[in-house]
Length: 180
Image (cartoon, rainbow, N blue to C red; front, side):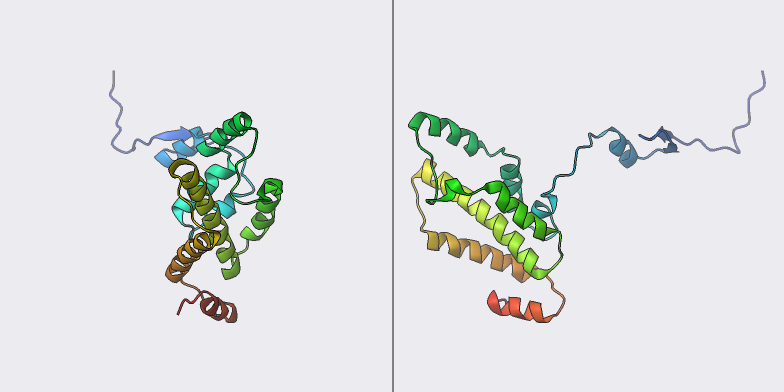
């Protein structure tokens, strides 16, 4: 039997993609082929963007997916106690999905005012969740004014780290948020 001459050929690993085409092998292509692909959610741009505050985005993401552990506990406690636990009166009548839809409609725009709105929304959700937990589990309370100051301070610090293109809107933003 004659041994074939393989000196002129090179071995290559190939992969059959999802669409059936043969491609050169790479780990990223294999990952893309085997990972589960779900539907894109409408609120993605509201939660995940380059200037988000990661811990705020994470809590907002959990909230939008209805996976905050406290929500499950609240449902059980509400049934046992026969009343709802709320941070502020009137919030129980607020249609959460409408608020999310309104701010999500803005979130695809790439302007400074939209960035501020997304940062404020995520910070408000985060600190209200944090305040709710502090009240329930530690019996600590902050006034609405104190909570506002904390949210303002976090968003302002984040805005100090963002590079903006010079414009009239940015000058107004710098004055309004005391960024100079």
